[in-house]
Length: 97
Image (cartoon, rainbow, N blue to C red):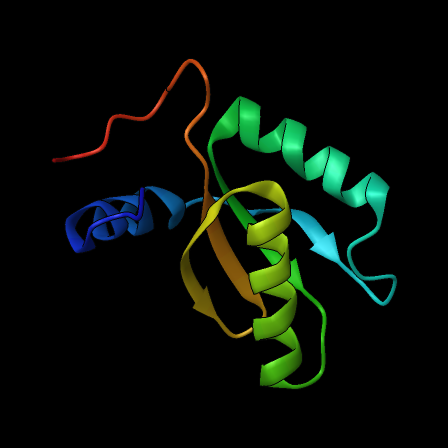
């Protein structure tokens, strides 16, 4: 279920103080990176990811592929930083309706 504008705004506020947990480098989306990201999303639900790609289109494509493969949703992308969210089995964050 896609996030509403109110929910995205709330998640952006929560993510403001976070540091990037995962850095996607020149190796791209490796199985090890996806496994680490999957476990981090299950623990934290909301993550900042640094995408080290040179141009904007490459960053956008990597972020989109990342969200598809982890079943998460992009909350925000600014420069090399993307904020992603996936609700955990036992949710820790409460979202506004």
